[in-house]
Amino acid sequence: MDSKIYSISAREILDSRGNPTIETTVMLTSGYRGTASVPSGASVGKYEAVELRDKDENRYNGMGVLAAVANVNAVIAPKLVGSDALDQKKADKIMIALDGTANKSKLGANSIVSVSLAVAAAAASHTKLPLYRYLNGLAGEAALTKIERIPTPLFNIINGGKHGAGNLNFQEFMVIPASNKRFSEALRIGVELYHHLKQILSYRNAIHSVGDEGGFAPNLFTNLEALELLMEAVKATKYHFGTDVFFGMDIAASQFKTPGGYRIKDKPQLLSGRQFIDYLKELNSKYRLLLLEDPLEEDDWVGWATLTREVGKEILVVGDDLLVTNRERLMRAIAEKACNAILLKPNQIGSLTEFLDVVALARKNDIKCVVSHRSGETNDTFIADLAVAVAAEYVKFGAPARGERVAKYNRLLQIEKELSAQ
Ligand code: PGA
Ligand code: ZN
Image (tube, rainbow, N blue to C red; front, top):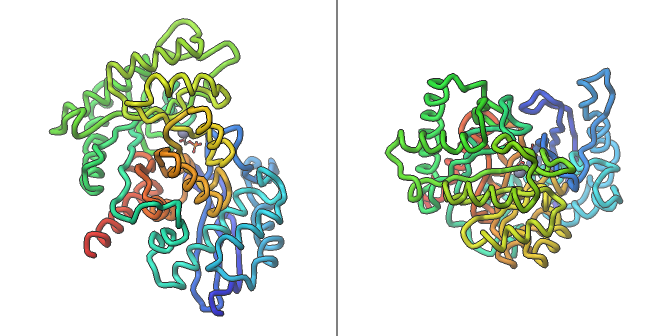
């Protein structure tokens, strides 16, 4: 059997914020290989699987990942060498058992997920299938639908919160092309809006820089003003708001919630959960939001259920920090009707098998799927193939700028071309 794993080797590389991360290569007896690297979040959910960092202040300000690299090379590799790369479930099961913790804190979710994805990439090369086809086969019931279309992109073109050097509370202000557009057309819409927005911000002297995800990070008076600027950008193009393009926001509410309530630039007083929901609804009545991610903090299950009951028919209420790509948390959200969409990030849960399991559960319960990058990324494009493979409705890969974001969009362009040639 030449699809056996012959070797596994990890090394320390850098991510888009200049922080160390892991890159792992899996080589098979057949000579085929696969490589995967791991992204990293800045607004990390409280319930995510644990990313192992060295915490050695003398190296990379404590951000090194040498221990995680050693866990791959010295702990995981000896146990996986010789097993079949085509048996993804078994490989992941071995690693999960080896770690033995609920949140992968022993070996590190960064170690495990790098191997998990590299095993799949190597198996795909071995079978000579494009990665998205191989992953679609693995996904089984998760991919309920055939691969037919490229997911609709969510372009985060204004970066606030922990991702922006500016002063906005909300983390992401997104433009979303209509789902009936071809991906290449949607991408063009995103790019044209991005460039128009830049002109508008320069004219107002508001541009500060671009943020971690490639969107602009302006200084503005309110969060509402960011939506006003998006609207100005739409009006400067030939596209129509409400038919060609829509807006969405990742509020990332846990990042600025204080024990006393939500403090935002738009209001002088602290807002209770109820008042904050009402403010989001006010924004929705002005801007017909298509999507609201993490509108409330990650432990406020009652608030989430209230919001979803009140606006869930018209807005995608997306759980990121709420769900952290975790099966148990998604089950609770389904039972409590806390949201109607899920953000999916492989490194939040730490293995491909568990990721696909969560997608399957979401699909069965009519929860819409958004496959997402992290704010700290590498040029790895695995998640582009993964999103197509599970027929996600949306992808969230940042602004159409910065190499690590554009790499994923360019990969989707390539896949679109391949699919249309068939
Ligand atoms: P993160 O943010 O990668 O910094 O966690 C992304 C998001 O909140 O969607
Ligand atoms: Zn988020």
